[in-house]
Length: 140
Image (cartoon, rainbow, N blue to C red; front, side, top):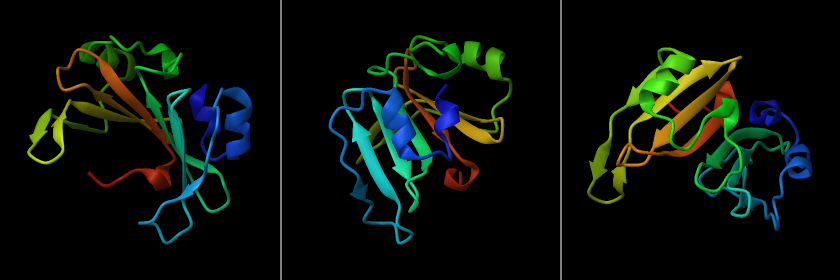
């Protein structure tokens, strides 16, 4: 469901999800006109290009009513590997002295776009699902 919004106008996303008060904010570190929007009510954040097309969706798993592909917040890592196969990239849990703890993460290419799933530091729960267009995928 969420993948269909990648590369589409932000207004289409707002028409489906209860975004509440949405403010588009220029991303200071970007020279290419990217915009950022956040909706705490729906658990969805979006990054938009200069044409207001969605390039990235961040889905907070503890808030969102539904996660992509039937993923549940309690999905075990082995369940995701069974469902999606070997990830294109992955990372182990880390402890950063400045930013705190991060759980394991996995990234898959699906239908020409990308899905990144991050776990809470304990590894017990999915914390965030990120969907990205190919141009939005960060280097590992």
